[in-house]
Amino acid sequence: MRRICAVLILLTLACSKQDDDEKLQKSIVSWKATLQIVAEAKLKNEVRKGFALKTIEEAVDDLEGKTAKTTNERAARLIGLAGELRQAIEGDDPGRIANVKDELAR
Image 1 (cartoon, rainbow, N blue to C red):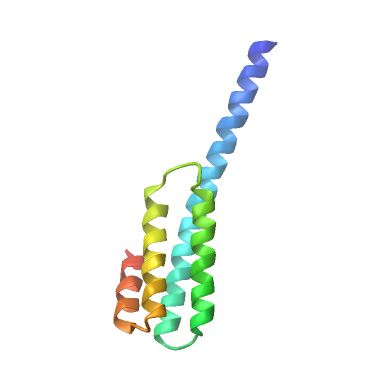
Image 2: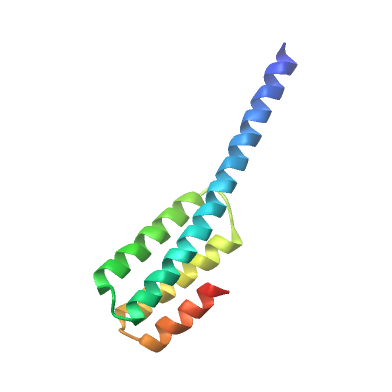
């Protein structure tokens, strides 16, 4: 009985870990696409600076929250690109926004 309980606990932990990893991967894909859209919209002056910055902040907060207990290279890179995009938008630098948008597309 103890073995069965131990196996069930391990399986539950393994499944929940996989779910967290899957959720993180889905968030990375989603936020990457969202940041590309925001960068493109900002280049076309279709969104205000405040909206773009708030979206970037939400992306970083979400990704940092999901990677607080683990290290993920893709998430770390995306967080870095989000920071670069934030600086480019704050500085009203269309060339830099375009560069970050291109990096996000890779």
